[in-house]
View 1 (tube, rainbow over the protein chains, first blue to last red):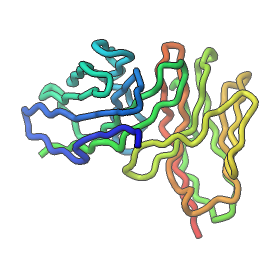
View 2: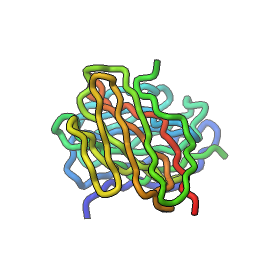
View 3: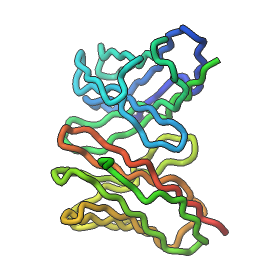
View 4: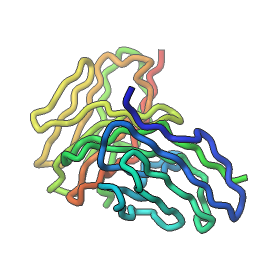
Length: 113
Length: 109
């Protein structure tokens, strides 16, 4: 059953700690994305990757880092430099054809302890 | 001006009502348009792609007006299960999806 798996579903971060959110897809999609959603707000793009070993900053990349060592995986690290990390984080992927809709994982909810 | 702007909502309608959402986009070169549905505390799910000729899927109709740069979503015979936030989404020239802030719909018995 193809899809996008995000883990964990809930995550708590202590002050000064880095945490990593996992995103795995078995849809054979080339492009993968990370978004952040705050209550009552739209989705904002953090990072995206069109191909393995390459990624670009989105609109709000500061305080975050990513890697794309495998096509299936696009982990997001929320670093201690991100001072307001509490949000709903969504990973998405899309096929290589242009202008295709993105498909989302079920999200990770990150909170500060 | 935001790249994608939606009706602010919330829309509170009775079951069986017809409701329409509008969305405007600022980049006239935008090529692809979508409506997503997002339930509370869940991920967005693709509802419809919006084609230039307009398209219909059961009770849902999407239309695109390129000249006026707006997209609409019409829901007929609203069900309780239609209660959700509806996101208007546009591909910009750089190949990135731009999301509207969403319009909340609440269908009451």
